[in-house]
Length: 369
Ligand SMILES: Nc1ncnc2c1ncn2[C@@H]1O[C@H](COP(=O)(O)OP(=O)(O)OP(=O)(O)O)[C@@H](O)[C@H]1O
Ligand SMILES: [Mg+2]
Image 1 (tube, rainbow, N blue to C red):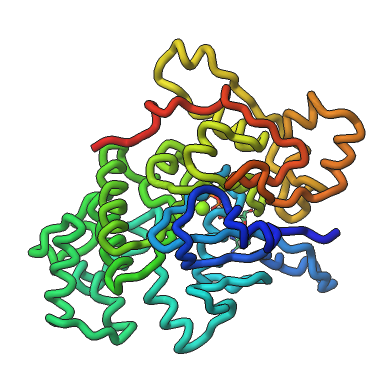
Image 2: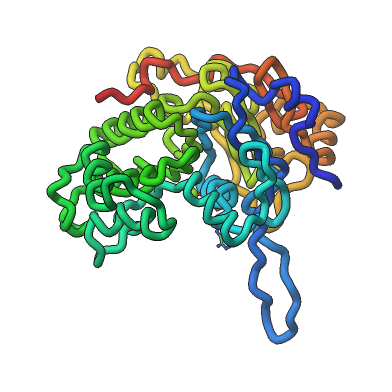
């Protein structure tokens, strides 16, 4: 069975989900990352790979934020790392500023590295505890042999100041900082070479709620200052709603729905998105009581052996309760394409349904400082 992606015609017509500036920075086409499993036993039989990312396509404009959501294990981190080519893609194409950069090596990859960076969830784990903050934030200049106007130290100190750290703490070590400050260090290191794209992988998930808002605000300020594009991976739908221009919902290595942030949150179409949205608690008890909860039954299937047809059909409430046998046969037999169902609203579902009743109320989601 062939697995279709966003049709080129649809992309060319700008039907890639939401209002766009048209200045495409990154284009990802049918990207896959399969992890081979170790051979088992004495007889060396290769076993089926883990299909962590299984054919995703999207565009990202300069200065834009694409949120990536979905439950644990759906392939968000792998998608982010493969886009940056920290992991080698199994197949698919990555185009950066109009140039095919898939499988770039050597000098070319080094050039890309300075344009594309990553911010990790666990700032402590990603900072070498034996290096001073000055060394950590200054490393990209040394590795990339980048020229600095005032010298590395002055450059690092002005970066520290920019991200809200005291430049006098240049010689301190990571353990001397709080979680939020460590994330600021990770962000300073990421923006050091003035990249164009940063994959933020759960950048605030490990932080206290009050600190989360400050770090999100810092990311937003840096974005407008440097015209940065973000791929923002997170579990927390409210943080994603706050920061994203468009949002992609992933399930078992595939994008199920992709739309402008407001459209996705107010008119979700894919039954999987419905269940994700309906799980976000609403603080107002009156609204909470009126809301429809859509609970998924069954476990997340294994990405080694995903279900046939639509990978979501085994847990899909619509499949279970509404669809006729003929319709069900389509869900089990035919992979749905991620395609426009309304202007700028893509969904990979044979039988999508707009459900405004499951959407979280707007006033519950924006983090404030
Ligand atoms: N190096 C690896 N080798 C084998 N399998 C892997 C590897 N890295 C990830 N996987 C598998 O790929 C799938 C996707 O993992 P990934 O970490 O990308 O998910 P995620 O959406 O980021 O999850 P989380 O929300 O928990 O961070 C999972 O089934 C995971 O076990
Ligand atoms: Mg992850």
